[in-house]
Image (cartoon, rainbow, N blue to C red):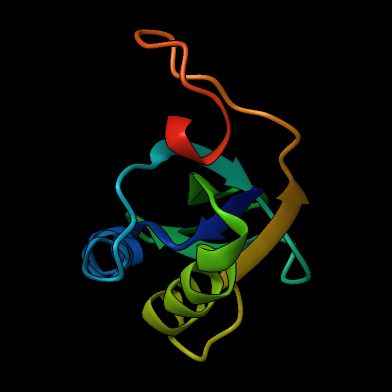
Length: 112
């Protein structure tokens, strides 16, 4: 099993969610987060005053999936989240040792 964490631009969330649903992803966890990467924030103008924000709003998507579906999930996120601009985000893939559905005590892929 794999645990996939994707950090994407907030306005791309609905597009990513729809694409993952169409690809067969049954569930995911979404969190609103802040952070920065290579761009180190951005300069904005508010009521005529210029200021710099060094933490940009992002959305973190977490998905536990089977090894068989992992490549499809990663490709779907990359294609649906991309704007081809700096700050589109990152995808991290980790090995998931185990999973258990609390209600039924199912484990492994059946718990997903």
